[in-house]
Every structure is written in structure tokens, then in C-alpha cells.
Length: 80
Image (cartoon, rainbow, N blue to C red; front, side, top):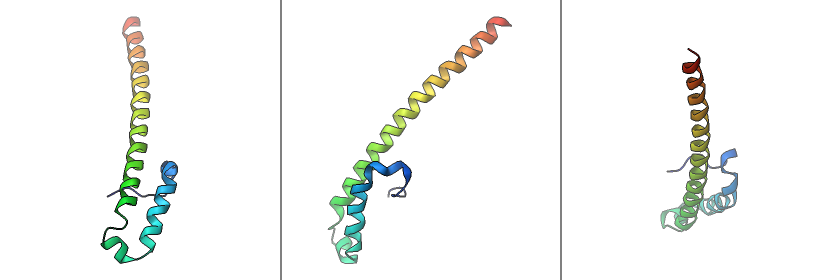
């Protein structure tokens, strides 16, 4: 299962998602016999890479914010 595909966060995966959509548009039998499995695997890999990039960026931003909060509390404790 994957998240909604065509969103602003997934622009880097647009090409592989289009290939999967085209494969699914060929009909039920293509999906049923596994003809779209390779395309779906590629979409999953791309989405995972995008998620890992977002996670890394969020972690770095949280680390910076945590340091700022720590320094503010240190200053408050020093002046109290």
C-alpha cells in the first residue's frame, strides 16, 4: 500500500507513477497476472527514497530547533 501518488511531495517520482498508471489503464488482466509488478516496485522504491529524504530533513530541523530551545532555557536558568 502506498500513499496518494500525484501530490506535491512526490514530484520526483512523477515519471514512474505515470508508467504505473499506464500499466493499470491496460486493464484488469495486466494487473491480475502481475504485469505491473515491476512498475509498482519502482514506484515503491522511489516513494521510499523520497520519504527517507524528508525524514532526514525533518530530523535535522528538529535537532536545530532542540538546540535553540536548550540554549534559551540555559539562558533563562542563568538569569534566574
